Image 1 (tube, one colour):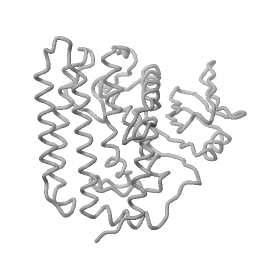
Image 2 (cartoon, helix red, strand yellow):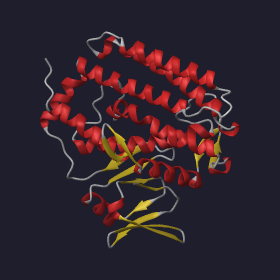
Image 3 (spheres, one colour):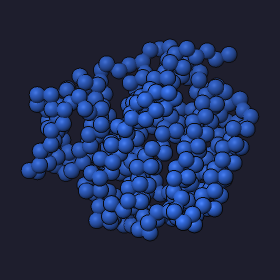
Image 4 (spheres, one colour):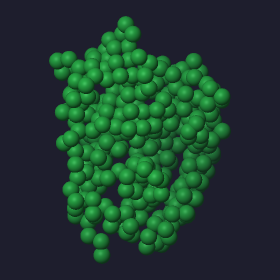
Length: 327
């Protein structure tokens, strides 16, 4: 589980195999063995002993913005890569095989978008036609993408962005029309968020980015060497490539929190029309996110938690890179 410390003045320490989180008069104790990452936000603190315990147990310490964006991290000295993976990753990122890997990830993302939309049908089937229209558009975009011919990413990058953007618009518009009225939104607003839904989704993506980057680092893959997202200075751009097939899991958590109507306007701070989750909103989202990602599902014939599936996919990519030969 990710342990998120976001309440102003909260402090995390360690004692006898337990992380102790104190916030005011409240004290929470969590076994070190249950924690995969610690996310700290502004005005929270951590003791040196807790840092060393995390490093020794290969628990990432993530420093994050109030929106959930990762600003920095501390990871174990046990992580590392080998020159074979690093050298082959450079070749892979510039190859036709790398482009195919990106397109496969985007195709999986679009399949997942269709799967989520199909869960939104109303009992009276009043919106079935809207869902069918959106899923058909997304599938058509996927088929066009899969039919592209290419040698390098430069050959198709602009078309990929166009197809991906069009599919995302159909996807999020259809989600919005199915949400209860208070949660509907005009479109994706990433940073900043202009409504409750986007504030929730941005924070959930921040948590997911943290998990994906950690999985790549632990597997020995350089998260800063991307393929599709490769022009952003000093950013972990491979995370943006790798995360695509897993985004729907974060989407699902947020959509169903809104459908259940258990997140209210009182759980947000609104500053100049920009929405930020407050402590109460974060607590609900984080608990829902952790529960969902700890649930065991079968994927590719392997029963694992969703969090472990991300780790497994990163390890598979590392193995692919280790043995990669570019003709």
